[in-house]
Image (cartoon, rainbow, N blue to C red; front, side):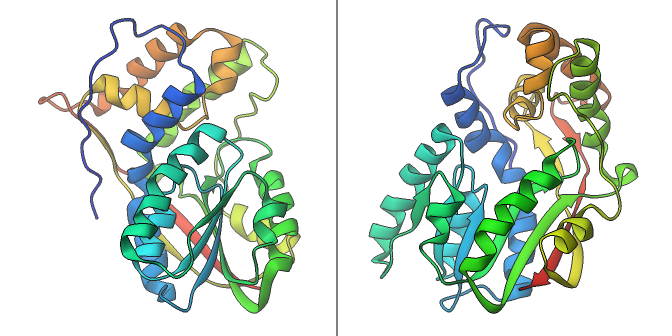
Length: 280
């Protein structure tokens, strides 16, 4: 599956601060679909279907849940961002009614509340780790709460960025770390992906690795403005914005993206993401 180039209305004031709702819409309309090949590859490998009871950690605006529900799975999603969660509800609940689903999707803002809806036989963490210091620790804490809701022998899928030399976007994302460090912003913490990130999380969460895979997920944008908005919606630039300002981050991000701009104005970056299949 190839990401669709997304067209949109341009801002008249690019440097104006974006609120959480705007960032969430940019995530849903521009960025989230870039990871669709990863979702599809995992679902195909695990044969996700009517027998699947899935809990998605960091479900965002619900695309991964929607794809699993389309295969017949019963889905529960958790995300701490209220704006993304509102979009997930708007996307998933009407869809389940149209399909006449026997069980409506469950959406909540805490892992503990989501775990109460178990038992689950598949837990997914589709927010790739490996960019920010502490993202692995945060995932371990979420798994410690979620995994007890799973049946014995259930599957847990962890995801992360692939090798830096195979991820063109990784060099662009380093802008976030540099600006945050220059401004000494708390939580700037750029670290970069490491080969054993996923195995380390699995070990600390008491999971048993049982296979892995790599998936090509190119990031494609209709124009530079769309690329900047999409990447800002990932939340990886929040510390940089706090350390400097949104205008400075947008400017330097556009400069870093310039080598990836094609003659027709589109922006294209090849990436590889990794997933680790574990058992409980």
